[in-house]
Image: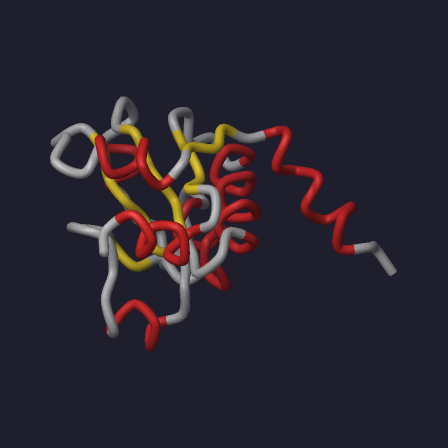
Amino acid sequence: MKKFEDLMSVKSEIKNISASEAKDKLNDPNVQFIDVRDKESFSKGTIGNAIHMDRAFLEFYLAEGSPLEKKFFKENPDKEYVVFCGVGGQGTLSTKTMQDMGVKNVKNITGGMTEWKKITK
């Protein structure tokens, strides 16, 4: 079995930003926040205008020709995407997946919603 630290080593292969850096992007029309937590967590509150993209279906949302394909990635290739989850793990893996699937400008919020809540109290 793969060890957790090996799984999370992809953190060095993606762009990570702090919650404070993400907050500075909140009202930028060229930035789209993406919440990869489960639907129940998303329904209890998210960041700004974030869209929900369940991590379990991420590849299906991104794959060209998939019945679940989200066309806005193709329609907005220059947009910056800021991904987050609860504490950072799923966001890290989702950001790596998005990057591998061809999304060019994607970043992960280190610490996810946990860190976000600390700076927005």
